[in-house]
Length: 634
Image 1: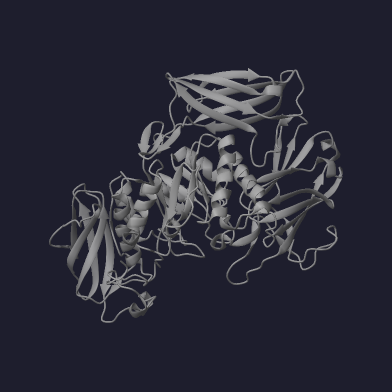
Image 2 (image 1 turned 60 degrees about the vertical axis):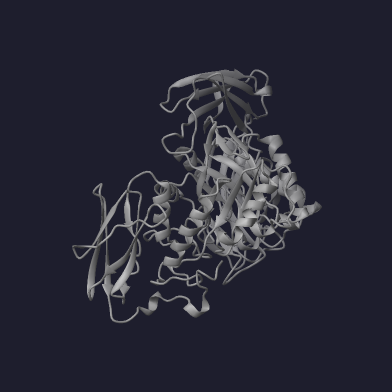
């Protein structure tokens, strides 16, 4: 049976890579993994760094096999054990493994050395500039001890067990393919399927030389977007010899089929429109716990998440499987400069990603950015051709900036088109281009994969304008943008940017610091969620000078009543946008004002505003004369 030991603690790190790889490290410091260095901004460094750790390997492990498993290293690396190269990996976004069995000194300390490089893009596709944030070991490192015969560990981050599902005449078919390393003829591979309650619902056995099986399940429950609909089964795979278990794996999976046409996207025959958010890294060390992010997605009613400047991890896919959140995967690689030298590595990186997510029903889309060039389009076509040979359970999406639509070449074998709106541009100015994208590919669904604008939680204005970086204009932008996009039926999904503020952007719907959500988050909840709520906008905009102000309240309830210091505010008129209630004559007294919103269902929210004599200078980020009025943006 395999054993896994985490090696994240107690490494040495240095920017000085020795000429002789076994030489002592100079200017080294003690670190724990993950540990990266910045590639952008202050203290940016492009080059090589070295990591080293010694581990004892006892002599009793001599007869079995040993592997090092890496969660990810940006952007390429060479791994040594006791001066010998055990592997080279080019690509910073996917997990990988190297076998070290033949290089081990048993009964002694063994030196693991990792030389990471974020500057050399020879024979590999470069990372798009805005996502080239750091270098180094961003994922964990594990030592895997496996028997001589085991479910193969040489397919990057995969278990080498691949599950495909379909439903025919009310019967679910679970097709399983497994790769076994070093089997003998009399070994047996058993596959058993359990439902969500743990009950055994099907089983089959196979020879390890051809470890394939099809298991029938009567009237299977399906995996659909939505927490209550995301039904998961469990496959237990055992490798047996004379009744003894040599290796064992457990994999959760779901019955999920996805189709696309000009009429939209269907999951298990149901039309689905994606309501999503982009989710990226918040610093130079990637997140390891994504529970809070998924809870936030569920709270706001999102049914999808787009990963692009995100380092793909199974733990995140697991959470999305469980919570019924559709995942859109996109490696942030610069395809527009792809050439013959980098083309194969590009395909390899996407194949590595595909092996990582293969059994996750939540992963429905995989996208590649063609960059609007012929070279990029050819590269994307090569990626999709390889993916479709290996994996027929996802849709391949050609992703690009909307400004490339007039002149950019389309990707012929893409199943759908993804378009990005950058720099806070208002879709009013791009309606013609959106329509042209649909006309150019009427048989393919169109997605808006990114739109957003900066909004600082500390900047506020009662007359927000484009470019002022206030939380109020941030919310206004999303209100206007969403209604423009939602009213166009051919747009089958949208992804707001981003879920969190990061070290590099303030476009987040949530603050990076863990503070209360921005107003735009509550707007989307009023549009997407089903659980009733009420929220007064502007709770951070405490200090006011105006006697009369306008206040917005977000709610999916039918009516909202507002009061100031216990006195009702006249009117409860909803704006033209459902879910946004606008009170345009809220009168403040000097000093403290308690604002309370109450719905007919008895839900309530309360904030405190203080009317002062002078403006609060801390609220001003960008001067009005440096910005652009809402009328000018169209």
